[in-house]
Image 1 (tube, rainbow, N blue to C red):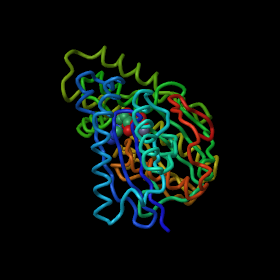
Image 2 (image 1 turned 120 degrees about the vertical axis):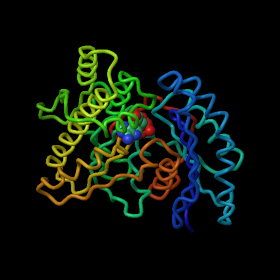
Image 3 (image 1 turned 180 degrees about the vertical axis):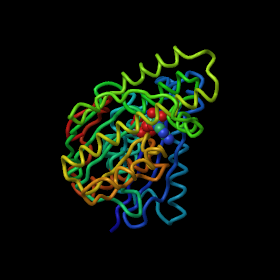
Image 4 (image 1 turned 45 degrees about the vertical axis):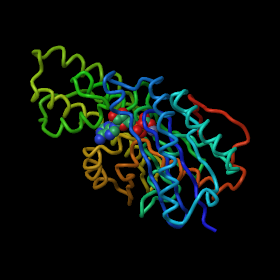
Length: 344
Ligand code: KG4
Ligand code: ZN
């Protein structure tokens, strides 16, 4: 019999509820973004995020269940309730975890706590042409920048990571300096489309042979550049700065990634997380691929699965249940806001 898994994501500012079916694929993918709520403050306000998850999560779940009813399925067909256990904002995580656990007690459907980064890692598996383990992953989000050797489900080795800011954070902070609205990444990318190669920003750590990243120096360099220019900045100048910032971030990410590919001899590369939605990154990678000596298949999630969503959590829950059986089910209750380990 095919497995059906409910996925719940509430680690930051997106409430996601989805249902993934083993043979029929994604049957529902409900997403509510809190962007408008946080925009006034220029970033996510944790307490407001928790309250908004709480306000919306039940209605979103009811919508998801309505959708599977149309496919002649219901609660009785769900094998597990997967929810994001961490890392993330503690209050936001608690809303999703408590909701999942309450559903679990009420319905007697077991729950599975999922590591948010594993959710991102398997988000590319929602595609019709998914990657297979083992692969090398570049995970680039608002909170993380990592190169990961993904050997098998649950068997991950972090071989490089940021020593300070994440790539998405660099996008967001430089966007803020340019007066762009939150979230800055997509706004900066859009502005950069009209920019020219007028400024050059540094590429920190590129001359170091390791696979780690650093973006804080780039952020400071962007700040110093902005300070030196005549104020207020014209739209044209802002676009040129956005162009320079995006070019620097993308070049750092891709050079380190291709260094990691040479080291690991991986034949599949999977790029996931919010920043993987970046069009410049997706275009530039083709040039790198053309110069790469080994055969290489590159996988990106569909844009709606790059940023946080419930579908990737449902997929991770499904894969865990399929691979590990009942041993992966929750035996206790915990959220892990700072969870970090080699194996997630
Ligand atoms: O994966 P995600 O939704 O949340 C975390 O787990 O952190 O990633 C959000 C990050 C934000 O920093 C956002 O600015 C960035 O992804 N982002 C982008 C783009 N879309 C989202 N950065 C650059 N270009 C984009 N198109
Ligand atoms: Zn995320």
